[in-house]
Length: 196
Image (cartoon, rainbow, N blue to C red; front, side, top):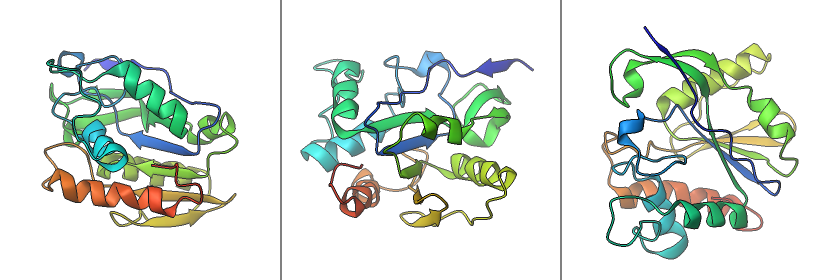
């Protein structure tokens, strides 16, 4: 079965204070833009629109079924939001975006990402597969930690916190407004109010 390499480079603004980690991008046929959370029916950017602008359509391109990549990148740079995934190489056991059929061949070196962002103290996983992979990564580095419950965080060495958020996929059975309430906890927990 074919091994896919991650099609995007990590997005790591120098001022990043939060790192969002999903599992792996969907197949390219499902992309509406060349950036993270590109699937039109994934609500990650709608959740961010609700939290920060009280408008779930804020990051949608006018009259098109795609997200506005330039607006999203400007927002991430302003807010200090970094983005990548817990997998660098995968095999898809089915030709879809379902994490249940994703075999991770090579994980991401999360600490190497954090070294490039000295202000980042918050890691956020956006779903179950990403959370399981991150827990395994920490165990490889002799850090024993339980996966946080959805909407909660655990403390890690070096003044790091790991939050787990609900998946922004519509396959995850929760209304977008409820998901936004969980993601809003990140903003409320930040001393500067800029973390997502």
